[in-house]
Amino acid sequence: MGLRYNRIEAIYEGETMPHSHYSGEEIDRRGDELYERSLRTQVEIEDNIGKIMQQLAQVEQIRAQMQRDQAEIEALGARTDVRLAQMQIQLSQLRQAR
Image (spheres, helix red, strand yellow):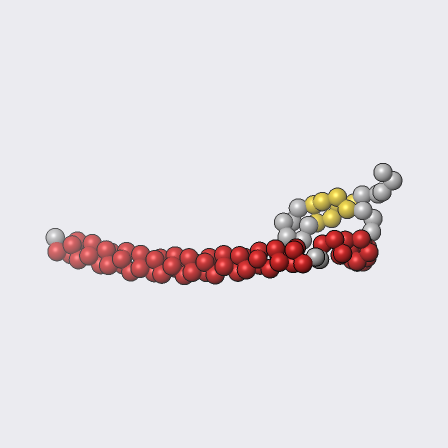
């Protein structure tokens, strides 16, 4: 392999990964060209598009459920905070009664 490798920082994880000497723009351009020339007709078929739409719908359902769960957790936390405050008041009142 005659390619020269550098190490660049990955966008999301902050990790490094091997990378050829091509710029990011050149890699994007070559990837788009390869996709158009060789892959598009194999990937973008009716069956795959249906599967992708199903998966997108599932992702949306999961996202909505996560939002509901998060709201429930926040509500539970707020109730817990109120209960702790009530217990602190009661404890303070017990101490004063002694």
